[in-house]
Image 1 (cartoon, rainbow, N blue to C red):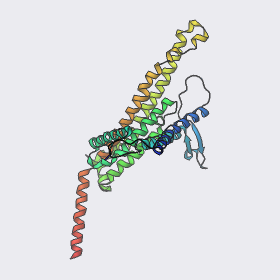
Image 2: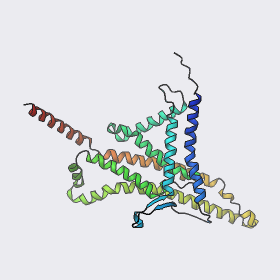
Image 3: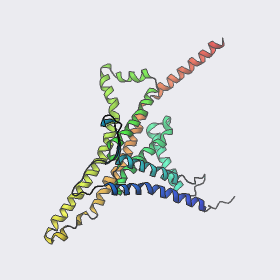
Image 4: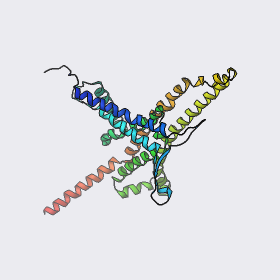
Length: 311
């Protein structure tokens, strides 16, 4: 048996190049679209996502379908992530021959370990879902480094993620039966039912606002710091004339240093926190003991029914 590692074929390299192009192309398209649609402005400009198109449904404007900058960038990020994963998993073999396969296996092992530690063996299949949430959130926040509007700075996008997580939480609560789910609102005492009902729907609201608030505040602070540094440059160099004072010397390097925290560290941290809250809320919603008890009871009834039917 030949143990030498074979060199990638020309076809393999061509597919790799296509994947790399498709990773970069959506973000480039987003940058071009942002340049073409951004109006000229001066001074501090802190605003929400621009609306590209609005579909009029003929009724109230409240029910119109809006295509915003955040939604478009979110789709572009998902396309990028899709081809990143295709690139990482291209050419997987039992024996590791590519560095990307080693990286892919490390990512899978770390996420599976995180899921197993926080959710238990009953949720071992949740690894792909958790890594998808983390990647989508992190990549969305990091698009600000390219000058794009980060989808995580739009409440509508983050709220959609939180609602999806809430639906999964409710699904696992209902696995023990509707009556068991409704009875949970009366614990520990019946008088707390209204508070428990409110707290049930407070979960997605708190997840959405926490993620949105931290990312959006970081972007606002970055803009304000950059504007302050430009003003400070003009103040310090004011004695040198209009031409020299217009040079923003304090904006060289310092915004990049602040960006390391507000755009990179904070964005990745919020992605991790959102994924952790997702894991804890979903696993905490599922009563494994009650589910097994109900499952065992159903099997006993089925066996008894078969015995009586046989007689």
